[in-house]
Length: 83
Image (cartoon, rainbow, N blue to C red; front, side, top):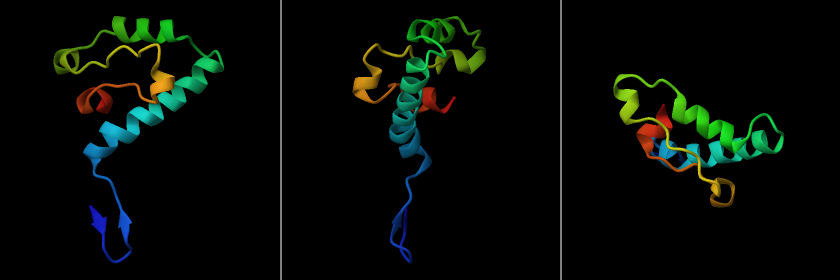
């Protein structure tokens, strides 16, 4: 969506969830892991063992890849990143 009178580009929610959100999550997770708040192994275990219910089971987040910081993305699709 473009705000013509101001010449600003405002990404739609879909674009944010597919592009900006995975990047921001990767940057935050990198800092949290470097600061030793938790490890990548602990995070992935929490994602895997969380008791998802109903439709959340189908759209549960993917495990975070070891190279997420280099890729600058946690991956996942829009539904997974929305929850």
